Image (tube, rainbow, N blue to C red):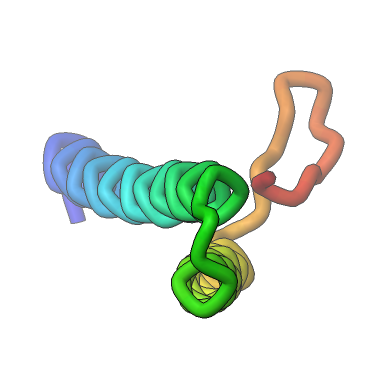
Amino acid sequence: MSRSDNRRAGCRDGRRLLEQLRLVARHLETAVALERCADLSDNHVVAALLAERATRHRQAADRLRRGLPPVVRADGVRAAVG
């Protein structure tokens, strides 16, 4: 494999990782919005439903995060994403 092939593969991997991180962020942002709506709701049934949906979004974000590769800092230390 040539150097340019390695760069292209690395670029694709980087784009894929960025897409996954964006999806994690979207799930977390959705969870925050749902929790905010649940807190503001006067209807306890609706509030419980919104809180449950927020929990499911947080769980989805956690599952995605667990599937991400570890981050290696500039000093060589491996750190978990999130």
